[in-house]
Image 1 (tube, rainbow, N blue to C red):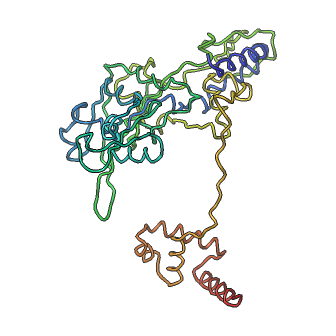
Image 2 (image 1 turned 30 degrees about the vertical axis):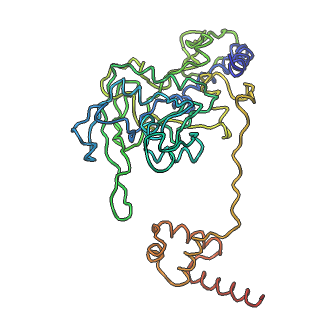
Image 3 (image 1 turned 90 degrees about the horizontal axis):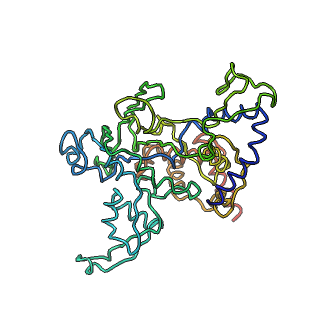
Length: 412
């Protein structure tokens, strides 16, 4: 048992007596499970499937129509439980490492993504001569990582260690006979005047609500999430089904969830099932476990934020405890704050080009064409220029720049 578990149990042993004596306090904590903090799943406890995963191909999945991936056409993908387990489980690349092309295939990423991860320090690399690998040319990167990699995260980084290692075993909950049918469509981008494919997107199939109704979505998203139920403090201490409150303790609470009007000793559920996972009792067919982050309202948090520790304690305790009631171990959850933004004192060179174009009397489109940037980029630079010079039109800007140049000439 680590320090966080010890602090959780110590805090609950200290708080539970007061909660049992005070009906109102117990009711308030019971209602927390209906708040957005507990009705929305957290990202570390969600399985994820990425649409642009290169492991989704004709050899592992059923594609309809056939050869639609090579022809870059919209198609339906049938993902079995075994394939989903392989797509979601973490990837280990220990020392001495493997070729970076093999690492890209194992992670389901493009080779340029591996090159970027090496530059950012996410993957460690050593370089072997090309002759030792039967190749010619530049040295070959051999990549490795001492920790497990989440192949579906934006940068491959695993969740913070404070969430534990539970995320590494969530993929085992997918039954092998499970089947997910989802539509995938290509992404096209204009690159140097030509349309090029830049990956794939899923068409979200929607989700089933706890009452069995289906909520369609049809959004084009890059990832599908499958929230999973995890063990929390109430289950660990055996109070998941609620606890008894003495009838003579405290005033009678108001009407609310978990309070029985016919029983003088209400049973208050302090943690609820805040999302239907694969083990939900809904007898419905179709892809009910994986949907986009809009459907599930997936919640992201970080310990560098102001409410990060409170969010973690709220979820791990099932709403029983607040962050201020649990001592924070600095070894496992140190205080890390984001660095304050410090603006650069140097002038922006691209903004100076936009300013020169404005003083020459060019239109926004002409400036964008000269600089090879988008129209919106020029417009954003113009707003910054107007704010710096405290003007509201081009005429005022020209006059202001003339005055500044005259003052500079006089001072010289």
